[in-house]
Length: 315
Ligand code: UD2
Image (cartoon, rainbow, N blue to C red; front, side):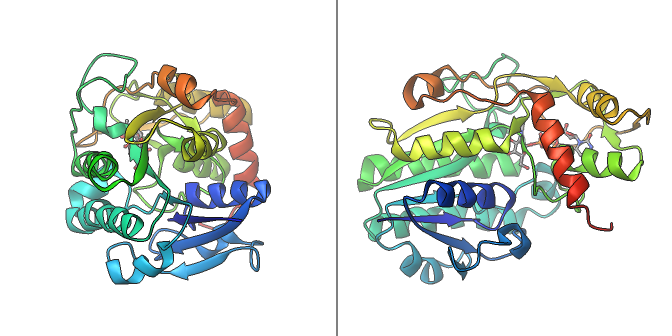
């Protein structure tokens, strides 16, 4: 029986990964989360099928015993958001850099076979060439991007210096069911979903012509599981995107069409630290991990919208 630990397992992506691991039925699943941004309701219905530990990756003593002898540690615990890392850089620095270091150190000490690390497309930052290939030099534009990139470097060095298998995946703007829309730092699609269902115009920062490779959470879960098992990839980093590129204006237009309403967006000033365009080249992930995204943006948006419609909480 394998033992899988998911840090950040009560979060939006982590809880989707936990469900996929349970569906496979190939091992015990352990959630490590401090419930700062993760939520118990994301694990609703899984009681008795998983181990849940409230622990903080910033505290080595707390997490070290929990990671011991795991087969795979999926390290998804993080404080996300570019603007949050600018407005309040200390917590995200401590969680994203120190926390990642502690997870890697505990994994190496505890005989873990492999750590899969959730890195970020933000590492490419200001570079203009598209699509982004793993071989391009990083150009981080925000503390968050620096933090996530530092985690990648640490992951690679733990593979080369400490004999721990690691794989980093640069997630590209993940969206889907259970993404929390309630904070100003929430992912833009979750905010759009809530606005759509409440018939409120969203605020788009800048002209709305910035673009993202929006990636449905089920595709990200799929590549994450592949990264845990693929042979010969330790120490490497891969893009985990859908491979497309959509402007915010186009996404909001599509959502209005799906819903059959007209609700023009409001425009505000551009956001500091924002990247202009982002799109993954997924050739390497296809070649080495056998990854092929299954969800078009429209399909992913429809599924996500249906989830928010059925699970809407009062704002
Ligand atoms: C970055 C990373 C992403 C992930 C994420 C975690 C890039 C390209 N992507 O996402 O991979 O690591 O950080 O937080 O760096 N926006 C609005 N209105 C709103 C909210 C956002 O217009 O109400 C805009 C925002 O200015 C940006 C876009 O929507 O241009 C996407 O913002 P986001 O916060 O969803 O994600 P982003 O791109 O910072």
